[in-house]
Length: 134
Image 1 (cartoon, rainbow, N blue to C red):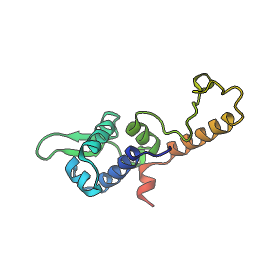
Image 2: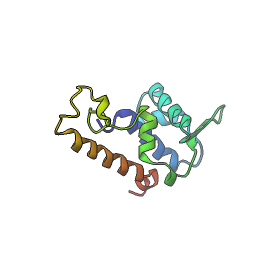
Image 3: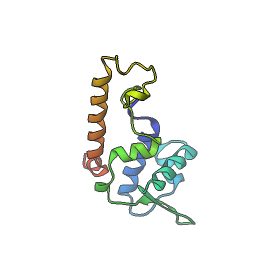
């Protein structure tokens, strides 16, 4: 479950906002992306709380990037949208928190934990700007 709809919608919204000449409101974004206004509003508010977006109130209100796209990592976007880091697998990164209490004897745990670390490292290096350049 690496990327949920919340992460997907967060990234799609950021791509649109990065290209927009002025702040865009939730209605405009939800129509352009054809997604629920209320769900998108929650995601955008989470991104604003984490300093990824700036929000403006009023008639000409809306959202815009709070930082340059090169300074926004995909990892931080996903963490903001999900409220936690993305997970490649359902195991815990800490042996003590293993849901099955078998991490010390599980032969897959070390591999999956290394894989999660590599994914986190990659997403931490990948920026919104690199997606815009694709």
